[in-house]
Length: 456
Image 1: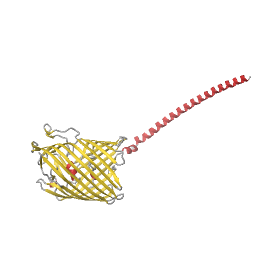
Image 2 (image 1 turned 30 degrees about the vertical axis):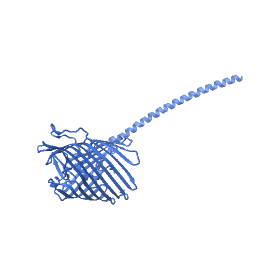
Image 3 (image 1 turned 90 degrees about the vertical axis):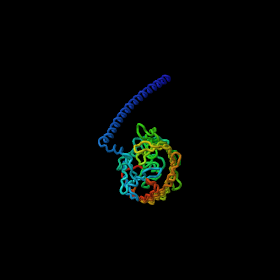
Image 4 (image 1 turned 180 degrees about the vertical axis):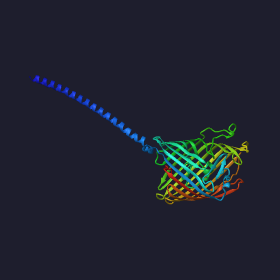
């Protein structure tokens, strides 16, 4: 009897187990069906939300356009100039052995070149239009246009990488080089109204402003250390160039291959208490094809050139707005090639091996008193001027100097007015007589719109 009861209990447990298993299967099927229905609802809701998000952008355009609007700014620079020389004299003055037509306006063929503050009286130096924005998560884009009375120039237009990581950054397009300290600074960032004598004499008004590629690497260290290199087309008007000289079919010197200009530099910065020290060394090398066929004594130069630079800036902060800064740069250049003398019809009438070893510097002391006022003093000189033709030193003038003093007043971050006095002893007339040029400049620099921050 007991055995029979045990068998019945075992059989019953198996039957109950089968029943539970079936119930579980049924519940799972119901849950799967419920999940499937929920997923379908989620998909429908997501589709509906997507359409709802897109519809206002298409219909009104307000939200999407604001996200894609770039920063746009306009900077106007104007001045009033008073000199002790007439404009007709200024354009013919030169730094002997270095540059022709340093100041004023002068024509080269159909092209008119003008420096800032070129004329006595009133000058509209430029209106600078700057546009910048992020392109996508990988690039930013910047473009700066200079409008002047001589036309419109694309001063810069380039893209910059943002996601390379490891301290790497690439820039491509037309841009101001990072050679030295002042080269990459736009005119409205200069403390003085004009470019230092050595910069303008060696590189011209725009310094190294070229089309090419720039690669920079910032070291992952506590002390700022940046290394950079640039490969540029080579179109500098004053020192580097690659275009053929003379007649296209029978040139005096053929064009050099492009790109023809290489730039490299190392920069570092560190703090000592409330004082920031920033400095660097730079090097540029490339071919030189310089065309002076439009001068009264025409000639062209073909060769290779190198430029070396050392820059240093020390800025001591007194409080949130005031500081004292000492800034200076030393430039040394070496040009080696052949000078071809021309007659009035452009034919070569003589040539000579030419070597130029020249050096100069500027140093400026500034005191920012408060939010509004700043004063500054600058001294500059081209102290070495060795011009060697066919092995004979031409004994060109040395110790070509200039000094300036300025007072600046700002009504805000967007409006700056300055008064500057300069005495330039580096200029000679066509008879080889030294001329001292005294210049008084009242400058107004006004900005509107959104403008990105500048480097230190």
